[in-house]
Length: 114
Length: 171
Image (cartoon, rainbow over the protein chains, first blue to last red):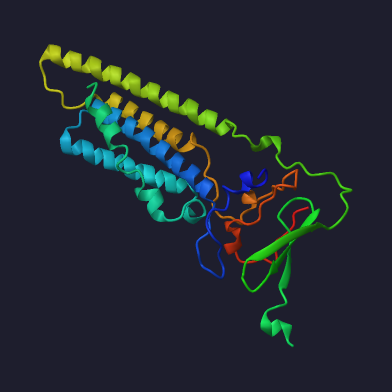
């Protein structure tokens, strides 16, 4: 048990080559997804503050939010060195995951103080 | 009788685990049922010292880059607060002069842009580097072999992995 408590989190999915089942280290994938989530949440809040300061009204504000999320996606792809497949199991995870999770934070910081 | 045709002779393969010392090799014997029986034996006497299995650098540390990113983020947020305060003052001024608020002055916009750039940089740096998910990459080597070999469990889901005959041993 002592040795396996360290290796149990490492190889979670089954093997490659003959079976063609995708293999990846699920624990590291989760760490990477958490990092993406933190980045997106923080930038949603910052985007909300900026939209509030600039005085954006309804549609412009939401367009600004999507713009900030698109910039975040590009930044994350650049951070992973453009080799997405060595850190995530698909492009969808980097680009679309957590896209709308920051929307509520954005609206809160956009409309609340200003 | 041809034992191999009956499948009675088990096929036996030797695997070297990916640990740093070559103390132990693992023998995998496959019978017809498919479930491998695994035993292990020492290859050489334990004359060499036991390698350090859990090096002290395992714990998650705040690296210099993360601290720098955090400082940049705080600085960016301070710039944003300063821009917000300027805008509030500007709005107050406009209220006095009874004009419409169309947009903050240009220096506030420039400040906002700078704060946004700094915060984007901080948001990408602070959560830490991405960890590789390839199981065969260098930093994902499973280097653990427990200090007490009495409690090792082999009947786990790793049996669906195909046999790798050419695992490299890192000395």
